[in-house]
Image 1: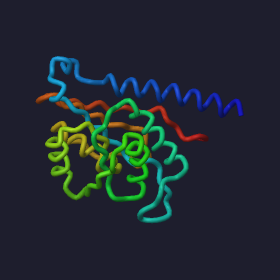
Image 2 (image 1 turned 180 degrees about the vertical axis):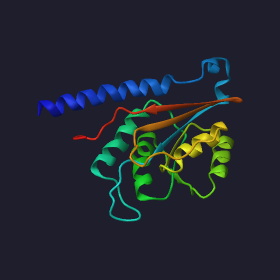
Image 3 (image 1 turned 135 degrees about the vertical axis):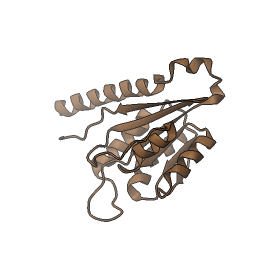
Image 4 (image 1 turned 90 degrees about the vertical axis):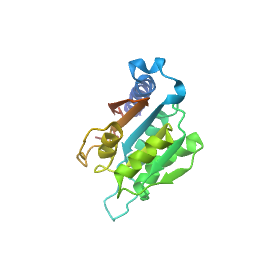
Length: 182
């Protein structure tokens, strides 16, 4: 019991520290920008999934990770939440969408350039939930740099793209959440 309490307390403090980093990670010259000219897009891969089908639900750890993401983004006033149309991505986006009072907007990954362009046109603070082969690629398209997919064992990255006028910055953040027993 004490071990679980220590784990929970440690996870809480690490989540809070990550949230502070998310909120304060903006370009140095952003204060000189008109606040209407700046927006941030957070891109994440879906949380841990079961491996029993083509469209599997999240594991228990995946559900906890999606809830941790919602806590992490709690102080970030999002205007939109996007997800591919799979159980694992929708379930990862759901806690954040519910907490922020937003609907989840589905997108297809067959034309990431079009999605990147639409996100830039929308100019909204948004969460985009995708996959290991699309998340980093989409982040790269948003900043104009080529980026590839990443290993399927990685779940703890948050790609934060801050756009202020013509200035586009990418911050790759690593969340502190870890599945119990790992």
